[in-house]
Image (cartoon, rainbow, N blue to C red; front, side, top):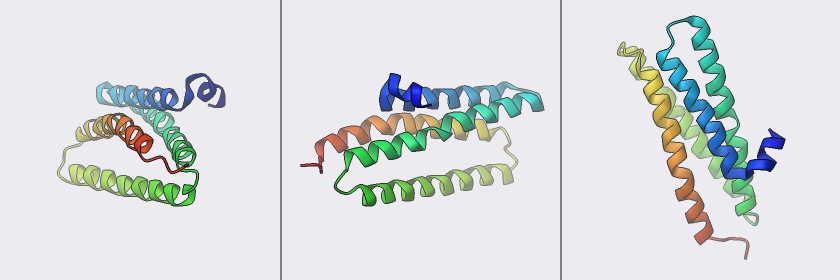
Length: 130
């Protein structure tokens, strides 16, 4: 991960790993076997697992003077997103819609891919390191 992050920088690494997670979602959507589902979930976990350290590193670097507060807010937002995703997925499963998991996961990944450029542009306008 360290070598990849040095070569691609933060945003490139973020998109690479989210793309791996998106590939895992596609495998999950089209697999018909348990082995395929295991591979898909490994890809999703590998892809999504690397995004949080990248985001924390970016937040800490951007808001150096307020890094503790900024990281706390990032953790709060992550926990809120985790709660919401689990709630939506659980409701879909309770309704008997087992095919909703790949759709919900793909939607969450695409939302993350779209929100990062917005967050970066806002953080560049609000430079707290002056």
